[in-house]
Length: 206
Image (tube, rainbow, N blue to C red; front, side):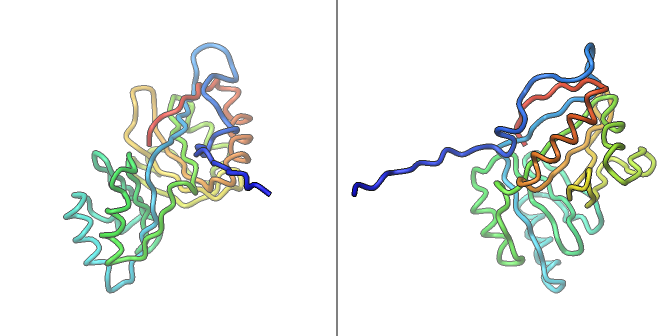
């Protein structure tokens, strides 16, 4: 019997779940959602006695300091997100050279590639905080959740990593990272929650 060759085309985390367009209330959108694709992501976990060496390596390679508290450190092409004591997520805008970078870091930490295991969404707009308030059990008021703050939390019972970026002209900006396997459940909640404000959805690079 002849063998059948099978090829697998890469699919983004939001493929078959969400697509660019608009939904909800007519008129000017109150929420903007960007489905982030193409980024590199890895977990970096250090032993307590290797954190200093890892920090020095990260500063030398990326010019960033490992956040010791729930914060995000941002650079032109890399972000480092606190993920727990002596744990971080490293995100790159492009996967070019990512494997080599992880190899260098692995001398000082346990490093695991996560690029295709997570779905990421950037939310902005004047009603972004109102949408999140429907499912996030955190106080996201600017005095309680400042720019650069990070939280490990639940969004509508889906475990998620949430952080706040610099504000845009039309309001606050948040990013949400969640397990790829839960992207469909999250999106169902998000559509129901954002509909009353009107939402515009686009695709973008991480």
